Length: 100
Image 1 (spheres, rainbow, N blue to C red):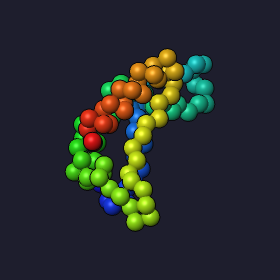
Image 2 (cartoon, one colour):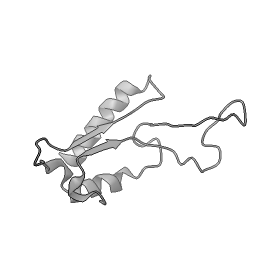
Image 3 (cartoon, rainbow, N blue to C red):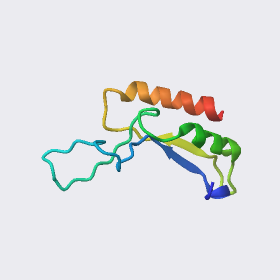
């Protein structure tokens, strides 16, 4: 909501709370590594019901901009290529169901 009328592009993906114990297993223990994951909707801890309700309240799907164009919502899934074909379809269907 803080972006208000300037919000034109939303990138969604589910993620895990990295501060909770045992969320990630990195080997060898103590390795200096960063973990960045985007998982399918419903596999992490993002509250998508609240997110989509906020976007509906903002009428995000009905926006058009002075410079031209319409609002964009997309997803970025990685880490499980074997799941991507089904996750991509499920995510698109959820976006359409929630916002169109």
